[in-house]
Length: 279
Ligand code: PDD
Image (cartoon, rainbow, N blue to C red):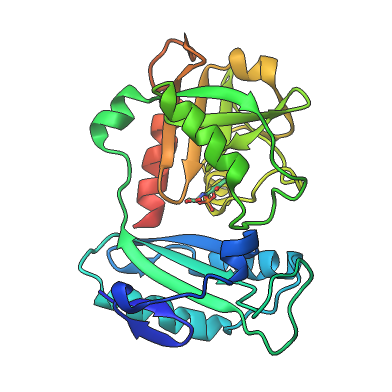
């Protein structure tokens, strides 16, 4: 299946980017991951709006209009063999002929790249057991609301989790749990759903918004407020949410059981609400 690069659809093996691309040299770029169910992109307008907000946040003009992005995305979906897909979009500040931290001249055009892969959501067996997570210090920068490709702190946190046999690392800053290395985190305590607020220290997840909406639609008590590390450890349920994980219970945290150590009832209900909503 072809990939999209700078206006062309071509085989992955034929898609080349300069080694002087600022994405490669500086991590100077942005990205999106859009889930596709039965060949229909889910919340595409919201993902493209977040892409636009992130581009504005790094002062890079969007090289494509929303309609142009949509036609790229629909072509990738049509040409891919899978019904459920994950579409990756990336824009970098492009390749100058020299290396300089400051922005390149206006003659340098952004690099726009997109490709489709299979969407692999957690299996029924993984959902039934839940996953293990660790907590780590949040060592990211101060604009975690921007979906940028500079992901080194996220990469190191997730790798630490994997090396401890865990699926995710929950990031703690100043005593509060902000999110996961590549997911948002929800907590259930005494029947109430808690979610951290959207600040510059958390990515505003598209799935997060869906979960908040579903809680409101179904009359589920919800509090959007900072979650202390101590509250995280005392939680009845902890979930991770993202475009690829949907809603997944974290049943072990730093080696200790979350609640009774099994996926909780509210998480199972929310997963079902999410399935009903996405279809
Ligand atoms: N990650 N927080 C972080 C740091 C993330 O990287 C992600 C998504 C999320 C969840 O956002 P959304 O619900 O819009 O997927 C939260 C994507 C999937 C990734 O990097 O692959």
